[in-house]
Amino acid sequence: MSLSDIRYNIDDQPPPIALLLFGVQWLAVMGVAAIIMGKVVAALHYTDPAAQFLYMQKLLFLIAVSLIAQIFIGHRLPLVLGPAVILLVGIISSAQEDINAIYSSIMIGGLCLTVLCASGLFRYVARLFTARVVATILILIALTITPTILKLVLTAPGPGRVPANLLFALLLLLTMIACDRLLKGVWRSTLLVWSLIGGTLACAWLLPGTTATYQSGLPLFASMFSQCTAGLSVNPGLILSFLICFVALAINDVGSIESIGRLLEPPEMEKRLTRGMVLTGLTNVAAGLLGVIGLVNFSLTAGIIASNGNASRISFLPAALCLLLVAFMPPVVAFVWNVPAVVVGTILLHIMGMQLAAGLMVAFGTSGFTFQDALIISIPVMVSVIVSYLPPEVSMSFPRLLAPLASNGFVVGTLTVLLLEHVLLRRTAEAGS
Image 1 (spheres, rainbow, N blue to C red):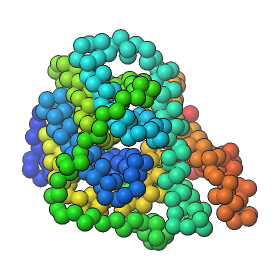
Image 2 (image 1 turned 60 degrees about the vertical axis):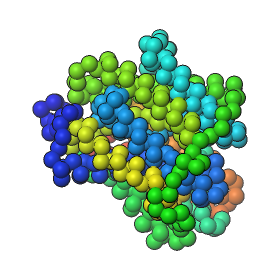
Image 3 (image 1 turned 180 degrees about the vertical axis):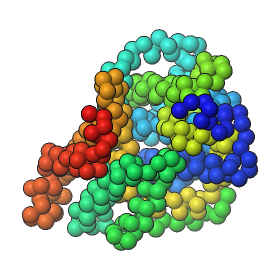
Image 4 (image 1 turned 45 degrees about the vertical axis):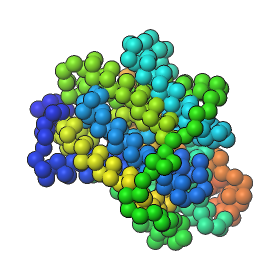
């Protein structure tokens, strides 16, 4: 893609109708990321739906304010912002720790990132992260999160419903892969949105009782600030763990900002990078104070811009304002909260499959190894690991004829790679070979 293909550049303001439509698109992309990650983390911390809603309100508020700050003060680039997967790994791994210690560690990590980036010292830390190290980190993130994905997929009204959940998850995953192969343009870039909507509707029809029916008793525009801060608690081991996560987050942030820089070639790119990363650090300080997962810029933005030609940072403003509005509307948060856990788990599985593929691309992408090649390897690996983690009681609940097959991670992974290689991704695989 060249600059001549861009319809609206960084500082352009699209006409009102186009501005609204682009804003809805950015809202959909960031909203799905917030719903998926917010549901996972809030469920780890709280069993009370009201507390989970409050967590989502705070997360939406932070995303909205941080996005406005980035597009007008920070990097001033069109970049999607959302919860950081690497911090999700850190929170999951620390789930047994005191919640205040977890978010104090995120706050301290954000503060350290701010100081390193503002002082220019981060470039020395970045030298440690060679291509092999980055590839390994991307792969580890995907594999580390598989137990959480399995827990979400297995969430069912009764033990007898677990096999149906697994079958539904596999079919939804394969449908997403097929759609990613067949769809073009904006439809492909918003695939997660349609997967969330379609998966929820299909789940309500095929797996009745799986969809939650939580409702908020709070009125519209209820304030979240009466319970918005986490207490300070210092755990040195936990802080060290999150500091390592933050280095990986910073590498991700650099890659996201630079990918847009290479695509759009804006002036003063070095200053934009520094300001953007400093603001990312401050955003994570705020996340720790609010008691929610920290944020990072997403690298997928470049692909969306390439598909619709819209690189206007102003087009993010309607999305940010809408997120800010929803953050103070508990009934609306409760409505989106009713996405079934099996749908959340499947979408997260697809995202982690893409993450694993990205890791393989970093490791082998210089030798004619395409992203589709990496996807054909990564998805079966993720599915195989998920099946290998199945509890014995779940495996025993399969029909007698299918039990030896469905509970064998190697067999399921092998069948999945054959399906992708020769059916769903056949043409792309052949073209890349």
